[in-house]
Image 1 (cartoon, rainbow, N blue to C red):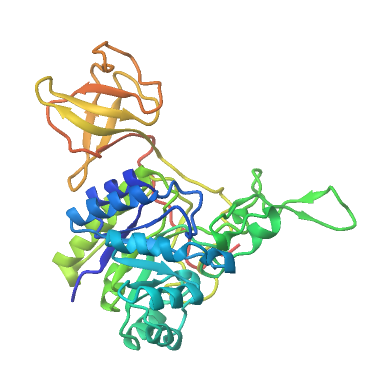
Image 2 (cartoon, one colour; image 1 turned 90 degrees about the vertical axis):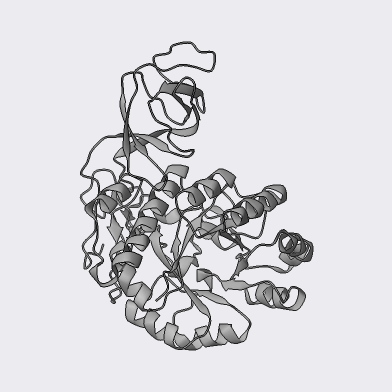
Length: 419
């Protein structure tokens, strides 16, 4: 039984390199247009070419999202755009719109097409239909149970991709009209305002201006906001079901989020590859997943039932129990110093945790800190400032330094909990 591909989000070139450093087998990203994450940094055509070259040098695949629901005018320039990214050697195109898929098949028959989750594939007959249209991989809707995924797998020759971690959408696999209706920003054109994350209250039409809370939380309610998906414990079940690719959501998440989540799922997949039937969850994996900004975790619909997505996080939107403060960018062997790019303020005499690519975490005690002129400083207050920290061993590029606030970090919603 093969180990599923680990597919990571790459919101920009730095995140792509970090995802690869921490163990991704493939990355997905968006170019300057046609994708559903307009507010991610995304890639210029020059950056996209560089990304593909870099990823392929590390034997990592690159998939490009062209997954908007296209209007007539969106096809203006699409031929030229596809020609360029095809020349770059991308490994697949993620698309949802039947017109876009037909256009690709007609003009670029050698480009592999991955059917986006936006296409809402929820059954074996739909999977067979899309396979007949030339789709080589189907990203299933996030509303399927393990039993349903298994049945789809048995009835299609296309590859199957499943989301295993990250934000969920209140609308069916992301097809949402809230943002367009409330703000004019069209989620289906890549410009979602995330209206489902806003705070809401009830107002009765006869009493305008009087707002009635939906819950007892004094900060408001999040009745449309789903909890985050975490299927770490289901790795063996999904692998045995024949899933080809495990997808992590998060092109607009931080570089620290990408590093942490990719590292944990890489460790878990490697552990499964070694242990198979003896696979079990390691407590430290759960602790690590709690250190990134997250809503309470849920297993979503995987066990079946319509109420398991865990909507309505009445404790508030995000939990985070550590602060990402810097990233290692080099090591001065002569002076025995780490070169660190600051991301949040940190101080001399602090003790920080270092998350190291493909290795265990380390402790970095800051006993002296120097700026780029060699001057001793007490803190690193400036965004992206480069500082030098004495340390007796080299830590690899992209090591993350963070201030851990609380070791009790992993939070899971009850499977039968609903709003």
